[in-house]
Structure formats: C-alpha cells, structure tokens
Length: 124
Image (cartoon, rainbow, N blue to C red; front, side):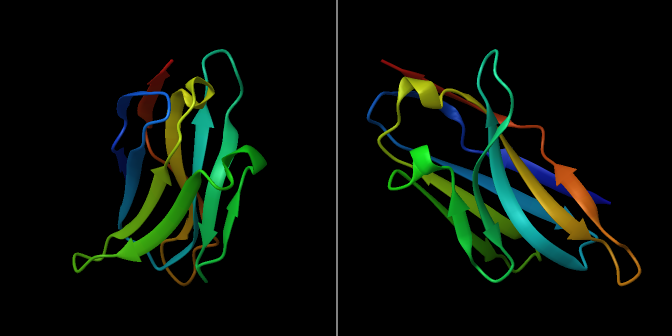
C-alpha cells in the first residue's frame, strides 16, 4: 500500500509565504516523480510544479520565480517533496494535491497515487 500525505497548508496574507510538504510511504519500489497540483474554487485541477527522480524540476509559468519544489528522503524511507511558495497572491488560493507515479515492485507497471490535499487560502 502506498500513501501520500500533504501538510503545511493554511491561511496567509498576500505577499506571504507557505511551505507545503508531501510524504510518500509504503511499498515503494521506484518513484518516478512527485508533482504538486492545485484546484482553485470553480476551476479545474492544474499542475503547479513537479520534480523527477533525477531531480529535474518544472513549473507552471505563473509560478516561476515564486515557487520552488524540492525532494528529499528520510531515514524512515519516506520520500518527501516540498513546495516553497513565496509572494503568494489571492489567485494562488486552492486545494493543493500531491501526486506521484510509483511502482510498488519490479513487476508492477506503476500508477498515479494522490494525496487528499491541503487547503491554501491567500487573502488580499
């Protein structure tokens, strides 16, 4: 079983910062990438930033220079992806989800796993 658990959401005023984290745990043979999505009220879910297993990062254009994604691991074998969000704007408000394409063992072709999301509210 694989679990992705997000943390770090909250309320902040425009111009402020938040740091989101996502911990992937369980039966993980290979983790291809870790990606942050967000869903603003009344809008479709969109990709915010992602990082590959090689450390290559990509961002939605509107996030470049404001958001930084990074990955790490811990002694308890959890893979961690963090999203440092600076200069937040009211339009950054939404539920932020963590997703990862994971193979659970050598024979597993892999699938996307999702966390339950963490809410970010940016007030003007």
